[in-house]
Image (cartoon, rainbow, N blue to C red; front, side):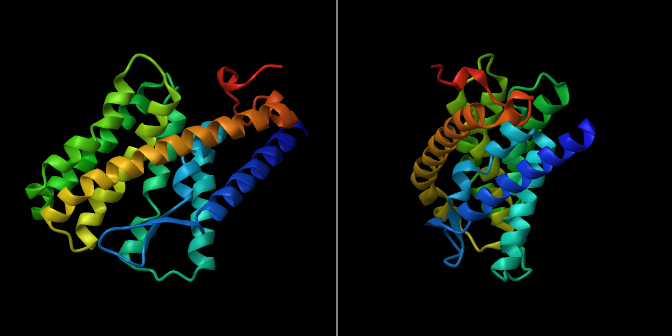
Length: 233
């Protein structure tokens, strides 16, 4: 009976977070360069935190449910641009969930993903000409993963940069880009990713506080609440 109740509770929270992600994905934030009909949404501000509260597996599952629902509801065409836009947040949610993990595999995965993205980017002729672009941004999640201290803003920055690494490396293969376009994106990415990281941090603090104060489920250990970010009475 307890097992069934635990499964039911987890399913409800997966659906709740999936609903939040789905709502955020319908509100545009900024247009993607090279594809005027594609945009970053407010999904970027709290998509990764699903991994922090639900764990890596269920966090990715919540993101998957929300993105597939959004794909169907908006009637998106099954084309390369739309398909690759499903992938980055899976890795961001996993990164955010794994940041506190002591598991060796999780730490290695956090490092290997941006390295693989850089290699993929450089394998493209345009990416090879804009070789400096991933070095500026996609080394950040690697550095964050290797730091001995833990910080929420850095955790958020590492997660959003991981999503950027996955999206950017694949974007080069499906959208016509030039080295000059990648160079022009540098100040844009600095602004956007800092705003995303700040938004992720604020979203995490708000939901962490709400879950601790208003849900009995959190007292049972799920969803995961970080007591360091709970304001005591």
